[in-house]
Length: 250
Image (cartoon, rainbow, N blue to C red; front, side):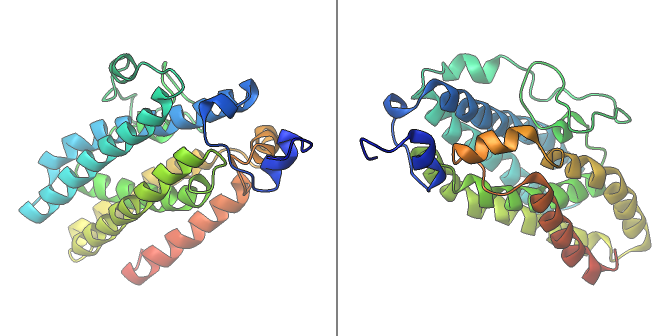
């Protein structure tokens, strides 16, 4: 960074920070919030999906559910390692919440967080059966793919590198969901269960994109931690959902 260039200008022009020592306080706070939300969501997602292993109707599905459970925990560990460089006590952090805790299935959180952790609101709802798990994983997998287009470009270099390593595996999780849907809709009973599950999860996953016209977006964009408004990301996700479900008659 030039000695004469303002930090905000540097970041707005695509500048990258590479060390905790170079990070100003306000930027650090937003960066830690971003990482905490990801780590907490991955830990909660892994814990919630673990129960789905026993919902699986066959060995292939059991392996898929196990893989998602394992890799989400691994992704959390990788980002938590970046948080450690900022002084986070990783052992204490990962043990301070019940990641498997869920609210009532009929709760209506919208985009609000509940409890003491930073997980996205969708991870407060319980999964109810295999069709429910597959539908949720498909919709949330597509949402994560859209969000990864933002996360892989964050202005903190070490974190962006971790997200670029994570992105292909998160994309594979969505593919596993689509494969599960294809198998389920082959029967009338399965198709009915999938339709009900999609109707339940779709608005809850949509809420993870946040509100349109977010006042915090401008701050995050100025820091290079965001590049695309919530409403644009939501529209991309909705298009992907339609593209994914239409061939299945859903």
